[in-house]
Length: 283
Image 1 (cartoon, rainbow, N blue to C red):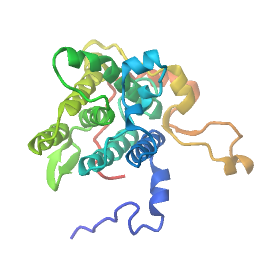
Image 2 (image 1 turned 30 degrees about the vertical axis):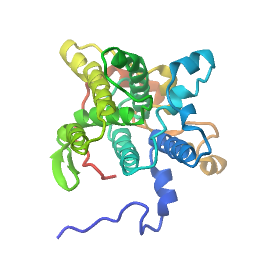
Image 3 (image 1 turned 120 degrees about the horizontal axis):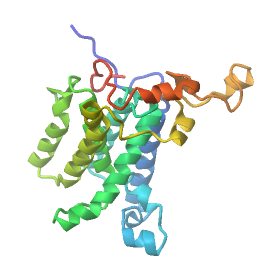
Image 4 (image 1 turned 90 degrees about the vertical axis):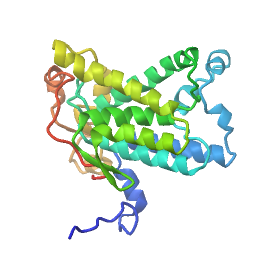
């Protein structure tokens, strides 16, 4: 008989605070920003209108924060918003810790940061195009970016086992299962489709094109590699530095390849797939 695993943060002696700090850095930052802005807007501390993407306000009033807040505000309090935030944490964590496509940093945190930047810029660039063809998109892109992450993760881990409300399903079909469920419930789905399309563009550029032509089109910028290193990023531990374990201001990541071998990590190409995938919901 399978043993039930405890839910993280519930009945766990470490508690929700430890669960939060155990999240990888990009997922933790995105989740924290989403919770703060969504709660602040719903409790009336911030006008929700000031968080959405409005190009005219950015250019004429220099409200440049809208470029970022539109990806972190999840909307009004509702069951759908709760599910959206859950999906944000779950799939972002799976992607960030599961070895995303290698675009120069060995498939580590820097590559995930680059993928997120690509997704955000592409969503912003294609938003006005959707209006030109008569597709109504809300100026809130939190769910768009979540489905971008979900689609790319599913392509990276096609055989991983997941489930939707207890129904087992292979990860490759997971984005479309959520889309179908959303349509069945009568909710708008254009934001989901938008994220899936951008995700497919990234997947094509990061994996399909290099596999066909042997040339990488997407490369993680050097400043991101300098910031997060090669492999999975771990924040510097100040106590260890004080005790002589690591120099203050030194390397703050678990390097799968040392910084001196960054060129070798970049040479692996964007089509270097790993073996197997992670089961959804597992650490």
